[in-house]
Length: 181
Image 1 (spheres, rainbow, N blue to C red):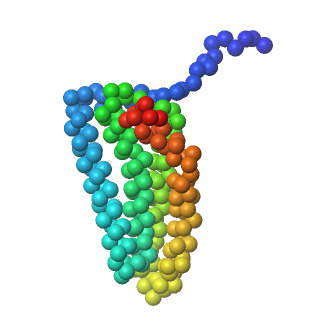
Image 2: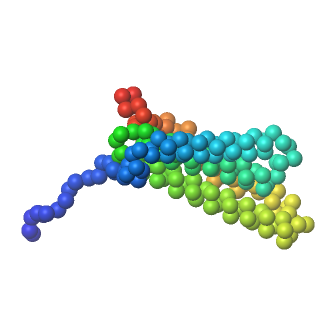
Image 3: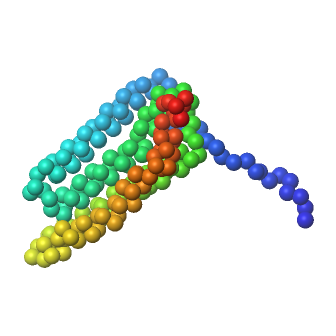
């Protein structure tokens, strides 16, 4: 056998982010714009959740799915925006390979959650419009919880995992506080 000359054995340790670095004079404006959009997204979703939780007449399947969609939206934006805001303020525009992989995992997971919840909400409206007399049987609270609980349990459990929390802290806070990590 011939020797393995010319084979690359290097590994990827980080990615260089180019996106907004071509406009250094606008980065503060981008930071403020994305910060306000992020805060309005959080405020709007928290307002939806608080309204649904406080008003007992809204404890129907459609509004429970809407509340789950708001929770998923908060997690989705939390997986992306804080890191982007940190990168807009930082002079080093790079992301570690593991941080990139974890950010992709969470963004895909919560993106899938959005699609799933929107599909179930569409089915809920279909049943309400096309089969109104059977709606209470087909979309009872027991069925609603049966659909939501197993789907959201792994996500909630993973957020309680200590190792995952430490990995998320390293991924998202390493730019802001490199000396503490």
